[in-house]
Amino acid sequence: MSRIGFIGVGVMGMPMARNLMENGHRVRAFDLDDDALADIVRSGAEAAGSAKHAADGAEFVVTMLPTGDHVAAAVFGSDGAAESLGPESLLIDMSTGLPAHFDALARRLESKGLRVIDAPVGRTSKDAEEGTLLIMVGGEAEDASRARPLLECMGDTIVHCGPRGAGIRTKLVNNYLSIVSNVAVAEALDIAESAGLDRDIVVEVLMGTTAGRGHLGTTYPAKVLAGDLEPGFMIDLARKDLDLALQMGADAGASLQMGAAARPFYDRAHRQGLGRRDWTVIYNLVRESGG
Image (cartoon, rainbow, N blue to C red; front, top):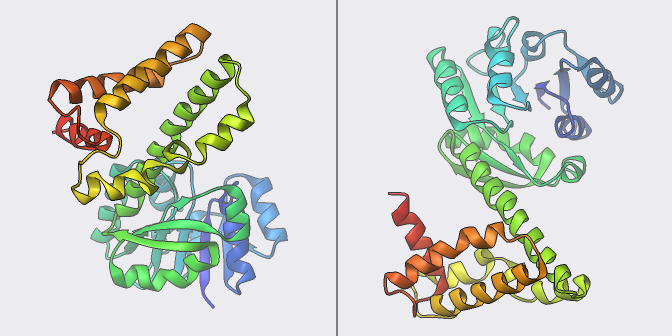
């Protein structure tokens, strides 16, 4: 089993480190929070006095920290992990930060002959406890393969997303969709409640349609991503129904900011003569808008 330096044992890092130990790996942990460090030591980890100490003699060093700045400080700051990393060590950054920060970190490590992959996680703290995280890996195939046994201690779905940096970029795409759609769901339920509907019944209905099942699991693979824009549900009907829902919500005094933000995209599609195309053609308009 491997010797692992684990830097950052907070809400997510703590159960991840525990799962590594439960699978027989030896963990030396470091955290600026003394209480968190004491907690992981009670679970069987060795305490490190610095990131440098955590990385000393480790085959793998895992960072699970709030931002890229925190990772850079842990790796290259005073008593940073880079001082102990060797050519056979592999740094696995599982944090969620700006891709540019990770890229800069990786280039700096590479200039010293050191290896690194990004492997941010998806799902929740409960999944971290149960070892059922989804882990998005970016890096050389050889490094990703080498890290896989460790990652499988922490997650049940390991996806090699591409070259170094692809993991964190995929994570942010995932979070963007999840976080933005969260507001749309909240608005939809607010409209329902404002209109005097039974929320539980509305949820039951939504879970049987694209609204609840999600475009990525229904319409997009069958339509725009397959190059098929013959209408399953045409733009002009979507535009009409959005107007009706906006009017109903306004009459009931509900919040409509996400709906109002979506309306111009359907207007633009209509103006471009796409009114009788499938509603997933919005994807093409967004791609054009982005240059």
